Amino acid sequence: MALTIPIVAEGRQAPSRPPGAHGPGASRLTSLPPLSVYVHVPWCVRKCPYCDFNSHAIVGELPERRYLDALRRDLEQALPSVWGRQVISVFIGGGTPSLLSAAGVDELLAMLRACLNVLPDAEITLEANPGATEAARLRDFAASGVNRISLGIQSFDDAQLKALGRVHDAGQARAAIDAAQKAVARVNLDVMFALPGQSLDGALLDLRTALSHGTEHLSLYHLTMEPNTVFAKYPPELPDDDTSAAMQDALEAATAEAGLTRYEVSAYARPGARSRHNLNYWEFGDYLGLGPGAHGKLSFHDRIVREARLRNPDSWMTQALAGDGSHLAHGTQVEQEALPFEFMLNALRLREGVAATLFTERTGLPLAAILQPLQAATRRGLLDPDPTRLRATPLGWRFLNDLQEIFL
Ligand SMILES: C[S@@+](CC[C@H](N)C(=O)[O-])C[C@H]1O[C@@H](n2cnc3c(N)ncnc32)[C@H](O)[C@@H]1O
Ligand code: SF4
Image (cartoon, rainbow, N blue to C red; front, side):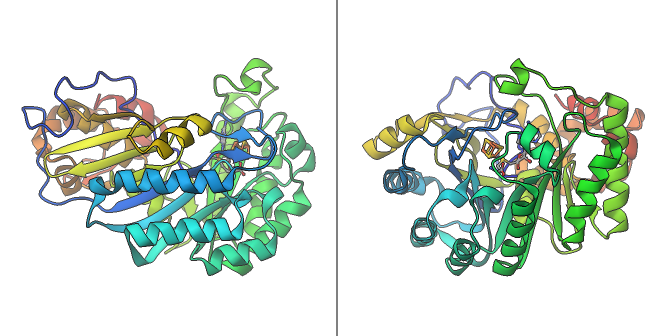
C-alpha cells in the first residue's frame, strides 16, 4: 500500500508567515533527508465499497495521454523544490496504476529519470490489481525499470472477494502473484483481515495461502470502516474486537514462523525485503507527491513544507496543464511546534523505532525539545528507556495511539 501515511498537518492552522520566510518557527537542518517520489494514478475498474482512497471508477477510456502530459507539467513545476537531490525510491500508487499501458509506464519513468536524479538502484514500485495484470504487461513494466510490484490481493476466498466488491477471484489472485514473481524479484501482497463474517481460521487460511507463494513482503491491513464509503452507509457484519485482536496476534505468530518480521504496524518482511519507500515515510524522510490528491513533504535548510495537489483528477489535469501552480491545493510550512508529533507519529510505527539522533537530523530541533513527553511516556511504560533509541515498548506498541498522543 502506498501509503498509510497519516497526514497530521491537515486541519492545522497555516503559519501566518509565508513558506520560505525565516522566523522563530523555522527549523535548521544541517542535512536534507533522503527523497522519494510518489505518483498517484487515480482510476480503477470499479470503486470498492470500503475504499476511501482518491480512486474513481473509469468512465469510458482512461485519459492516459492527458494524464501523462499533466504529470509532466506537475513535475516540471515541482523541480525547483527538489533541484540537485537524489531520489532513492519511486512509488506509482493508486487507484490502479496497472491500468496504464506499458508505453505509458515507460514514458512516466523516463520522464522522472530525465528530470530527476533517480539513483540507479532506486526501489521502483508499481501497485497492481489482480484483475488488471496480464503477465506480458508486468514484464514490460519491469523492462521499463519497475523492480517491485505491490499486488492488492485482499483475500483468497471467492465469497469474501465478492463481498468486498473486487473485480478479481482467487484464481486470478494466484495467477497475478505468479506473473508478478516472474516479472520482478520483489513482490508485496496486500491482504486484509477482520473481513465481513470472517472467522479466525478464515483469516489464517488467507495468510497461509499468501505465504505458500513464498512472498518476501506482506501488508496485512485490518479492514476499517471509512467515512463516505458504501460500507459506512451500509455497514456489513464485522468480527468483534476480541476476534480481530486474536486475528492480529495469530497472523503475527504465523508470519514469524514463516520467517517474516512485523517491522511496522501493518508491514511484514523477510530479512532484506523491507520497503525502502515506506521506510522513508516512517523515518520522516522527504517525498515529492505528483498526481491528483498526492501529498508531499519537502525539507529545506530552514523549513519543512507540506503540500497537496487538487484531489479531483479532472481539475488536477486542467490546472497542472495550465502551468500556473493552481494544481496545488495547498503548500504550508510545518510549524516548529508540530514537528515532534509528526516525527513521532511516523517513527513509533516502526517496531525497532529509530535512532534518537534522527529526531534532530530530521526536525532540526534538539532532543531536549521533547524531554517532558519522553519522560512521561517512559514512566507509563510505553516508551523504551534506552536513551539511544526512540522505540515503543510492547505495551506502547499495543496502545500506539495513546503513546503518539503524548507528543501532541
Ligand atoms: C491504495 S489501495 C491500492 C491497491 C489496489 N488498487 C488494490 O486495491 O488492489 C492499497 C491497499 O489499501 C488497503 N485498503 C484500502 N481500503 C482499506 C480499508 N478501508 N481498510 C483496510 N485496508 C484498506 C487494501 O489492502 C489495498 O490493497
Ligand atoms: S481497487 Fe484499490 S484503490 Fe481502487 S477502489 Fe478498490 S481498494 Fe480502492
